[in-house]
Image 1 (cartoon, rainbow, N blue to C red):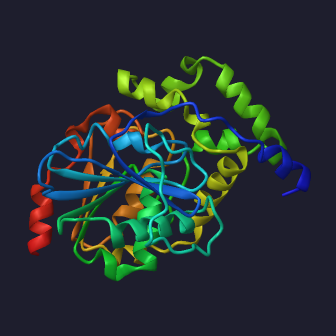
Image 2 (image 1 turned 120 degrees about the vertical axis):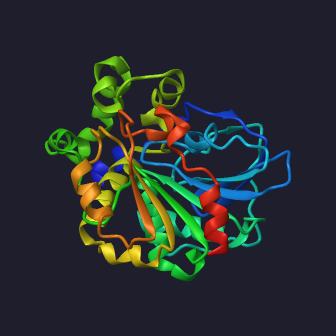
Length: 307
């Protein structure tokens, strides 16, 4: 990448979205981990890993139960989407040796969260889209941590997967230097111009969360690096990584215009029989936002803990 392109790409992007949050926020490297306060005695712990250009609010409505301890990742160089909480640096933080804005880097944030934060033994790690790849990379790096963990991979970026042809066609002519210009163009266009194509039928929660996608990261370089890294990670990662997942669910949408659905299914089918594949009726890549009815219940979690 040319130095002039990097200069254009590191211009800061202002944060454009946050929600009230009650809990603690820990800085971990260039990312963060937020732990939501829960009013009941925690019966299960859910760690949510957001997707490309999303934020951790993706999971908050799907896991509202007062007995759920909710831990939410903010990937490296993304804005932390919380109001009214001052991030603190935890004593358990360890330096991360990978390049920031990569799946490997964010997997290290997840590993630190999983190693230090859950207060229950019933643990689910739920990743959407790129978040699915972050989970699988963490499994690859530290398989022993996931032995009793249930994994939910929602419309996930998977080993040997592909982007949807529509996305590839759009990205091919874009040089690094064009990104800031392209994002300004997208941000000024009404989301109706592209929303229906990529996001499917809208509802109030989707509208709120998907309206500010291109303000999720702290700079344009993170956007470019995320995209390039997603494609490289899919190419170079082997489906053998599934062998370390003891209990897992793939949630596959009926229609996906972000990732290639058939490549996703082909990859998922290479997994061991302990992982189930649920082909949902979800009309878009954003399954949980379309309807949280697709989020598996916790009975699978207690069975996994006893298994």
